[in-house]
Image (cartoon, rainbow, N blue to C red; front, top):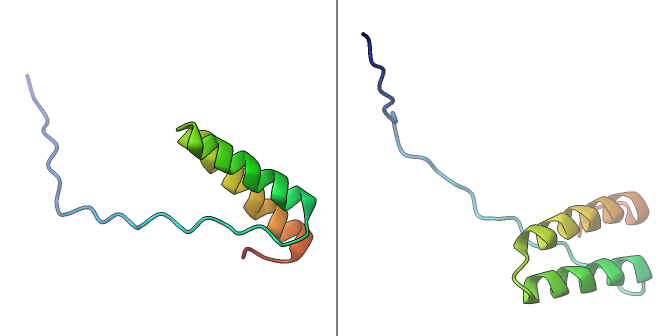
Length: 68
């Protein structure tokens, strides 16, 4: 019977997480998403905070012409 082994060939390099997107001043939708992210972080729900960052980045791209 043949057994296989897996050997890592070299080090693994991980990037730092990207910075959190910043809401646009005066935009109610941005503010709502920023509040949702803050609430998620304060309760330790990092998955929800990440999901909210994705939504905020999409909103920034679609409504404000970019990620800030």
